Length: 449
Image (cartoon, rainbow, N blue to C red; front, side):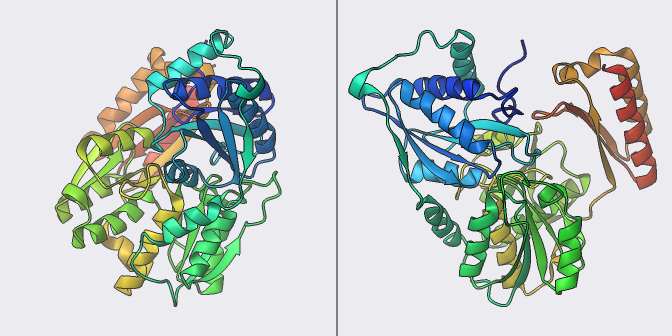
């Protein structure tokens, strides 16, 4: 049986794969594992994004939490980074986010944070999973007054907004910004924060109805945002994903700005201010080669990890780095929060635009993005880690590696959250790498059945 936890918690189609029963079991096992050393009644904070299944799963999860004697505090719809921050702010024992991030509405997920606001280690996830596979038979079943309580509070989002505002040293007067909230968790916090800082905000996709999250909008579908920026004569556009832990942008010309470019802009600004610890940025192996060349030119140390913001965070903590992230827009400011934070990323990018007086199109020239092609091969979820067992796929990869040796690279990896194998090729000729990436992805799909 495959591992229950992926790279970003437990995910699946809500009500079929991620059922209320599984949510209740996760709540009970998670509460027990994360709080079993406590000599007092522990409290766990729970929040969710805007998808329709969130309430169903949240109540099931909280029932599980209370069933082992812990208390649950429901703070409603909030970005993932808000839960990470508020878990520390309110000094609760753990936090849980119910979200499937950038995935379509039928999916949902459950992600735990420990009391310090960090994602769980593999060891803790394995302990939770072991209890669930054993039917939670070893968990306590308190009765009477020892059963946990549920509480609801609505003021938590203002705490997160106030914290975010304090992290930049300028207002945003004079900036006109188009903001795509992806019909997700950023729909209130991002808009209110930018308005409080004095920006002129044009909000799009900020009317979530439970079913429209990520639907042709947000950081995975930026076409409308880019066109709207040009039409509105705005300074730039910002695109969040469903749970607002990632950010992508577009400049005043409607040209996209990815996570690598955002980190290059912000990282060099932090270096100039003496706030980039050890002049180091932590990124993944998916980072564009142009970012590595930029780092060399600017005298920065670039550390690379496996794909996944959890691995970026682990390395940041190991070496004491203050900035790290992914091309996809997960950017971590470790002095300010313990996970990728789309709102903080937006504010720091806007801070550079405001203080420099430069257009985003000019600022992003600090790095040259080299041609890159990323194609997803759809495969059965239980086979995505086994693509390298097929000789024809291995042979095709080896041929491409020889072809691009010295002037590009080939990177193949299974997705941590979806039934896909991701094929990434970098090289000098966009048309050539596109065709090679598509060809290899087709081979993987046809072979891994």
